Length: 245
Image (tube, rainbow, N blue to C red; front, side):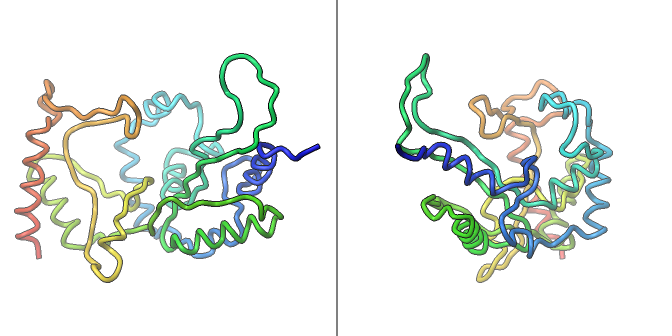
């Protein structure tokens, strides 16, 4: 006698991506995406040479990359394309055994990775317009956080200082034009602050955002920095930043 919120939500979610789930299908979503330059693609290709593709696949439990792309092209796609990701789905009873109830509420927690030159405001407006135009005016979209994408020029003082610090510390480093993650760098790079902001660090950690996330505190491997040497690395970049012009 009544509609199912769970099926209604599933139907709405299906419209956000292509049937294989690999591309965002929200109207106008990629209109302002800036493609990678030839230089940026070259940097990615150079970084790929130092990566172990087989080991990466094994760690992820994979046999192939999205769309069966070769490794370097998969890395380029990772850096260039925006995403629509379902972090979690919750509806009704999910405990042991059956419980024949019709859930009164269904929720999907999502994240949308944006790339230059998209904006958070643009993404919010296009998501709402897409749902409405597909007849899902009853689906609520509560935006709990977010920020614009950010990037920094390769020839900025900060990046030059980082590379100089890595060289001084004896660390071989590659430049990655984009990080396929989320951080509020635009707070620094966008007006009114408008200063370079980037990532730097030595040492080793893994399992980001997982219950077993870790960072090496005391290293038994002379080639891997512990927390003390990693901290001194930040002191070194301060010296390099002061000397770079």
